[in-house]
Image (cartoon, rainbow, N blue to C red; front, side, top):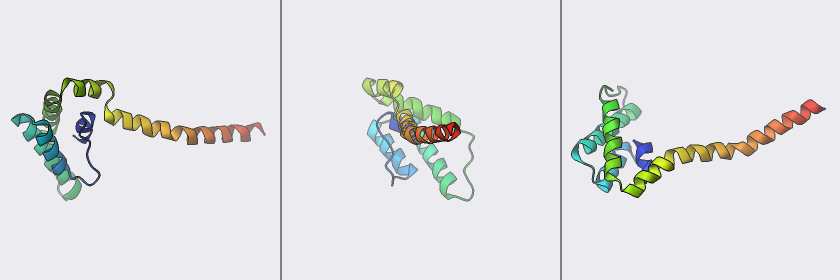
Length: 118
């Protein structure tokens, strides 16, 4: 849910709990009732998986995640949907992380190459 909400401009804050993010997404996008309920169930399941010794049952999570994603997309504006489709924030963060590692990898590769030439 954090990635889907970030793709539509509602990235989770570092100190934000899953339930707080769910509340912000639900109220910020004025989600329809089925999507809002699905977002709430996902948040509770994530909190239980993180903080509880006994995680919640996962039978409905796939269905809930689909309902939440569709609800978030439906509630977002056309521009946000296009941005999420073309340049999803979750994907951009992964690309930025990978690009940030390129100089170190390049330096290591060239150092190994120069040692082999000696």
